[in-house]
Image 1 (cartoon, one colour):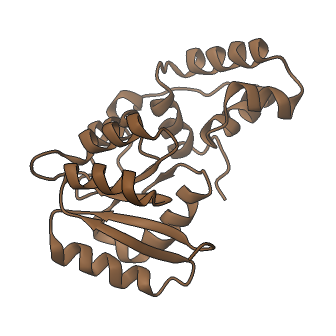
Image 2 (tube, one colour; image 1 turned 45 degrees about the horizontal axis):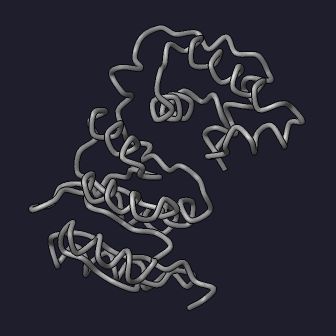
Length: 209
C-alpha cells in the first residue's frame, strides 16, 4: 500500500462511487482507501486518511465539491484534489481551479481517463479534460507574443512550480521571475494564475507529458 497512490472517492451517489472503485481496482498502482457521500464527510475523511489524491464530485447536497475543496485545503494545503463534473462550462472550471483543485475532468469519459488523471495529479501536474470548453474570459484573438524565456517560465508555472523554484532552475533572481510572470500575464490579458494555466494548456503554449 505504501507504494500505491492512495485515493479518497467523494460522490453523493453510491453507485457512482462503486463504479469508480471498480475502475480503479484494475489499476495496480492505485488504492482506494475511503469513500465519502458529501462534503462534510469528505473533510473528515481527508483529515483521517490523508489520501494522496481526493477525487471530488463537483455537485453534492449539503456542501458542494468546491466548498469542500476549499475547507480541505485550508486544513491541509498539500492535499491534491481532482474535480469530477458533468458540466464543461468555463465558469465551473475556473471556480474549481481557484478553489485549489489540481484537475477537472468530465464524468462522461471518466472510465478512460480516471487512472491516468490521478497519476498526473499525484505527480504534481495540472489536469484538464480535453473536452472542456475554452473559458469565455479567454476567448478572442490574442497573440501570445512571448519570448523564449517567458515560455520557459510559463511551462514551469503550469507545472505548479513557485517563483523561488523557477528562479533556482533558471539561475535567475526571484524578482526577475516575478517580472517575467507579470509580463506574461499582461501580454495575454490575464490576471489570475488559474486562468493563465487554462489558457496556456488550451492554446498549446506549453508541452504536456
